[in-house]
Length: 124
Image (cartoon, rainbow, N blue to C red):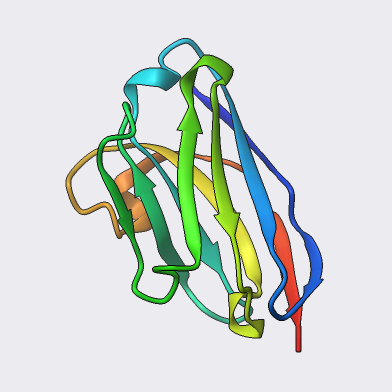
């Protein structure tokens, strides 16, 4: 079992930065790929970024490439999402996820463990 807790969300202006954290508990955390998803109001949960268990494989959604950076510190059992140049369309609840069942990492149904989410609001 893995428990995930996100933090770091907030209200910022367009162009600002935020860093989200996802703290994991459970001794198998370090063996799992992890990801960030987000759900904007009245939309589906969308893939944002993926990082492999040792950090050597990273993937991003096209909409965040060049602005967001995913990373993890396995010694601290924590994953991060550095978000720069934020836009109003980045407004969403951001979720971290762990342990995909398959290679279809862009699908929320692939992931076994989820946090409760943290709200990010970007004003124009």
